[in-house]
Amino acid sequence: MDIRLPKLGEGADSGTVVNILVKEGGQVEAGQTLLELENEKAVAAIPSPAAGRVAKIRVKEGDKISVGQIIATLAGAEAAAPAAVETAGPPASAAPILAPAAPVEPAVTELLRPEPIPAPPPGVPPAASPSIRKMARDLGIDLARVRGTEPGGRIGLEDLRTYIRRLQEAALGPKPAPTPVAQPAAPAPERIDFAKWGPVTRKPLSPLRQTIGRRMSESWSTVPRVTQFDEADITVLNDLRKKHAPAFEQKGARLTLTTFAVQAVVQTLKKHPIFNASLDAATHELVLKQYYHIGLAVDTKQGLIVPVIRDADKKNLLQLSKDIADLAEKARTRKLAAEEMQGGTFTISNQGGVGGAHFTPIVNKPEVAVLGMGRGALKAVVRENRIEPRLMLPMALSYDHRVIDGASAARFIVDLVKAFEEWSDGVLE
Image (cartoon, rainbow, N blue to C red):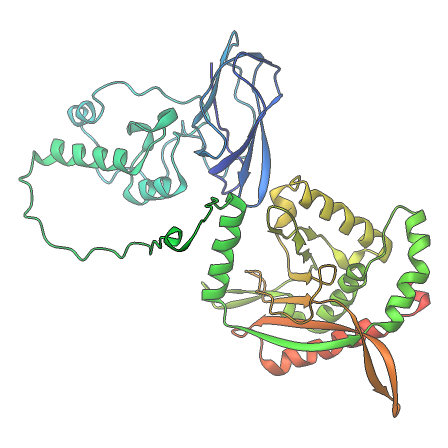
């Protein structure tokens, strides 16, 4: 039996193979993981729907595959009923969302289908990329009628063009080839031969790095970003952290500056709800959220990942410490589910553990603000006409200027500084 890639979840139609965990000739059990697939920044395990011997693995690591594409063939296994998977619409066996504008005559159908097309299992749509699916929907084409010639029966752009061309020929008869019209060529990406100046090594970008690049480029090009800088005196806060850290460790938690930062940010967001909002550009509405889901930027070997702490306003410092450690570990081991990286209302990027001072963090769309924190440093500070050594924390607040004005950002960061500076033993105890 052929095993096809099931639907991965809402809006997830494809992914990149990062690990293949079985070998040809090996035995697998029903539910055993065949491969791991990266979609956006999440890694999902793809299980076998039945037990049997792996006769053929039809993909390799690094391949980008789509829902419905054949990933492996099992010998000695009977096709089982399709597993229940999350779908965003009707199954492939149902009528297409957009039907062709006019009914296709039987003769035309035969011309379009010169040989039978093997149908995918019930509930599994034909293998095609999201862009091909969208193009087919816009044109009113049922992909079940299109023969895919790419590996695994996947439907490509040329397959769709061939289908449309045959439909035109069947309906109107062959047309004479149009006179070629000179079209301006699209500029090709600039390719520089760096090797002519010395030895180089080329390394392909990982799917995660490509996702990060795409999202950062989108944020940079669509969000008019401004950054507000300030410093918070965390001398008292750091003393409290050191004092109470052993008690937290006894309860299986690590009390860090990030824990305090999450609670301080939530307190400040409640005073300035516009920073906990999103802009719906399609309806020209500001979406003010009544929940506080705080994203934390985590540095991993693969790249930056931002898991989200749900309902941070309802958790004390102990629970926040445990959640932060748990999500950070899952991020570094690539065990985060897609849902654990979605729904954030505000993001914190703490680079203090690495070093450096002020920097300009990029707003994490569709949020409207992000806080960047650098490494705290002892500085000579004037307090009550005396110079004292104080531990100062550099902070940078980047915000979407379409939603937030400079005066609002200044008020926010002033209140945030106060929240960092006004801690007491009573809160921790």
